[in-house]
Image (cartoon, rainbow, N blue to C red; front, side):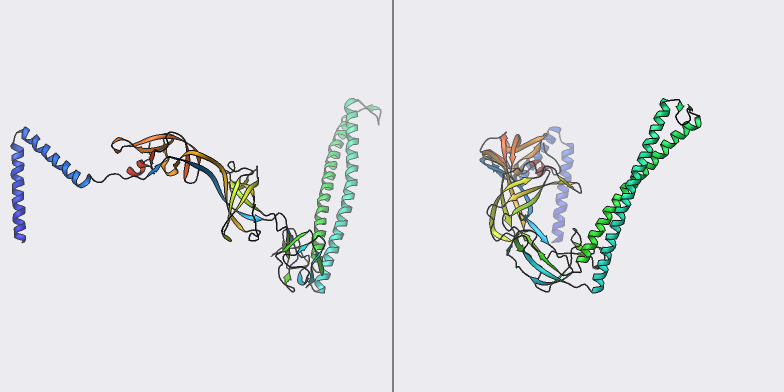
Length: 441
């Protein structure tokens, strides 16, 4: 078998050699004829094997429709009012007079705290408070002294200025009834400079005394809170509303809030803030919820007061709520170079499923154009510093048709000019399909 194949290959090689020798020595007309025949055969083979592979495109049809411009954001539910109620005492909940969901009026009793402070801790806290009061009294007295000194120094400075002005406008020294000597003139000028410095120093001392008083008052306040944290206490409602989020049952441990930072000290005799404090309960208005979100600087000019909003909650599946844009910021907030604007949205059909701080997905309907020409966004491509769509012309040649785009939705855009209704346009950029890396044009 191998011998037959080898013989066949030898015969083909011999024929090819004879044909090549004939081709080299024949007339040029015969050579041209052979080349033409060869090219015709190649063309036929190409048509047979490759002629059926045509470029396939996906099309969209320009049609009339409605384009809605939407802005999607995430936000959280906020109540119309919310007041955190903390314990002024570190201890245990001795008695709770309310339960979650109760409505209370301002001044009603909420809970009683029994302090866990030892007598020694109570005494130390009270001593710190007394010391702070004493320091405040000292600071106030120091300010009175500084005030009196400042006025004395000011009067001395004004007197020195009067003497200098008299000297500058007269030649006779009223004290000697003789002309001013050079030394006397220098002494008068030097006195002005010194009394001015003295007055400025006394003025600064008075201001420093004021700062000392402010610090002393802060120390009195913090030490008083620390002392209160060692005492039993009954807490009343600071405002009217509905009780929520009671921290626990009777006997639960609570930590005093010693500052507005909602942190507390583990050492009752000091005000070092080390422990995060949780409110004992929250009083809020469980009606009139809204949603707070932030909108980027790209979208803020699209959003406007009164625009309709679709609201979805992951905690409430299979239901869409409606609302409106109630309020939006004019001044943006810069967070690490990212500018955002606060926006507040109403929940027009809120129900019992919605609770404060729930996360929500918002779709803001910022604009809507009805009965306009529309085209798929995927059909619009960059073209000569503008935009265009692609259509098939004669012989399936792709033709770029410049278009003017209006309102843009998530999937389709408004076409203001360039194509007519019913035009079939190609989806995607054919230039990129046929020549990866090209931008088209």
